[in-house]
Image (cartoon, rainbow, N blue to C red):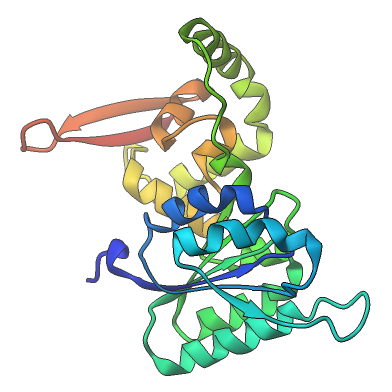
Length: 249
């Protein structure tokens, strides 16, 4: 089975809907899932609102695609991106796509690419319509990719404490219900669910699920913070390797 990090990805960015300051974080995130074979960004580059992108394209080897706005009020870059995506699909040179946009107009494109057997990653702001998020295999909110400003150790510790205090309120009943039902779906006869399988199932149920949305880098610390699940770390027979299982209390 091909490793996920070996996936050849076509990265297509809608410059009208994504801030250029996040480009480094976006590309670093994409590198976790595969290797970009195509990197293209779409805009009417004669417009002043995309001027900031021009300063970062060369540094990240992203190819700009010009699409004039023929009609006022219409986003013509959407159609250019969709046409290119289908052209790339039929070349057979990629294993998946990363669609970077907060625009619901790409919902049908994401669905069509998945129907063709492609892995589809979506990236956009939290305001992205649910239909587009659900159409992707995984959807990442770009807000979590913001680089925090430098802070003193005391400030960092205080911020961490406040984050921990608020995590239960941020992890609402829907999240707890989602994790609980997912544990029960794959649990063995004793009620234990393997953490790796749990993470995969959560992502299938909610493509936009990400522990970072709740202030945690990994799934296990998030589950621990909820206080409603038992954790069992079992020896795997290899040095420094443990298998983690979760059960509803």
